Amino acid sequence: MNSRQTIKLFSVVLIALSAAFVAFIGWPRAAMTQQTSQKSQATPTIDEYQPKSTLVTKEHKVERAKFPFIDIHSHHWNPTAAEVDQLVKEMDTINLRVMVNLSGGTGERLKNTVAAMKGRYPDRFVVFANMSYDDLNTPGFGKRVAERLEQDVKNGAQGLKIFKDFGMELKYANGQRVHVDDPEFDAVFEKCAELKIPVLIHVAEPSAFFDPWDYHNERWQELKEFPGRARPPAKYPPFETLMTERNHLFAKHPRTNFIAAHLGFHGNDLERLGRLFDANPNVYVDIAAVLAELGRQPYSAHDFLVKYQDRVLMGKDIYEVNEYKWYFRALETRDEYFEYYRHRHAFWRIYGFQVPDEVLKKVYYKNALKMVPGIDAKAFPE
Image (cartoon, rainbow, N blue to C red; front, side, top):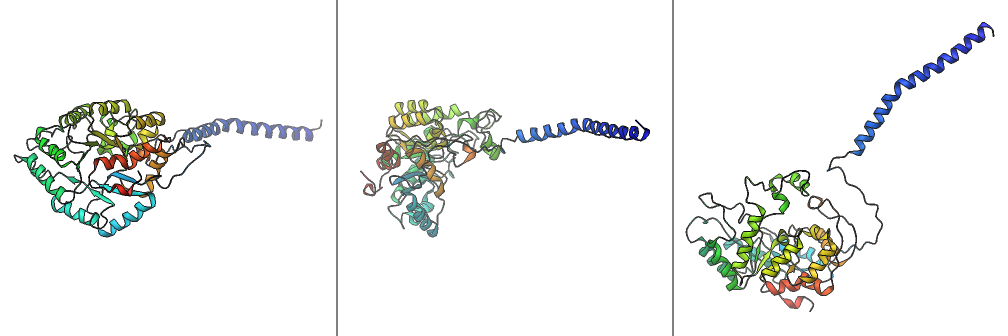
């Protein structure tokens, strides 16, 4: 081999070695970059992780209720004539025959709300009165509330709504918390029995709101979005204390019909709710804003609604006409694993728990007709 060939061969080897060296030096960095990229993609935050289901199954999108229904739990503060007109148009699209406005107030405000809603559409709306706590710390408060309520009923109210601050945040002048079963309010609840009007009462919040706000709490995301919904023991009475007081109230006034809002916050423990029903024939519940609780346990929800079909009422809470269809789908179909409309209430998906038509009629309207005076039953099927 001559010197020219030797030099050429040496050059080729040198180039090959250089390329191999560069590749060897660069490999760890490339590997680390790839691993870092994979790691960042594989660890989204709890808010970012929104998996898309690959499940292929039959779907039944129910846009309109099978039967006309009564929404026992809605809120409309000081509605205008234009707002009421729009409400009726929207109600007609989903077969919502009667809406119960729980935010009627008392006195002049109650009269104005009745005029705006029932005055314009007497068969489409029901208005509940509310307590005023302005004179809470003046002796004789309960009797005055009972007198005001009697006048509110004369002015068109068809029930009483007790808001959630009652028993949890409401306080007397001395700083003492108002207890749900305080004797001061006995006159009010007995007046409801006398007037034959129901009391829709909101006591406490979901039990998870009273638990430590950590990554084991299934309502963590909602508490992140609304930190004020947390009920830490330093500021609020325990969940079980509120339940004990509430149940004592129910038992103390057996002639008064109570509707415990939001499945009485026992949607995660239907056996416990059943025991509450068994012990108190005067207690009912609505399903407002707790559909996700029923939808994650379709077999139990179905059996519970069949067993206690006379005690459960349809309700929505926050009014949005396009959200009712989730209730229809859950109550009327056996669809599987579909998304709930409000992610903060449920990071899980829900299932339909289709109930028989006779049960559906009771939930949709028959139980409300039985409890709320003054609704025209002729607008509903037998």
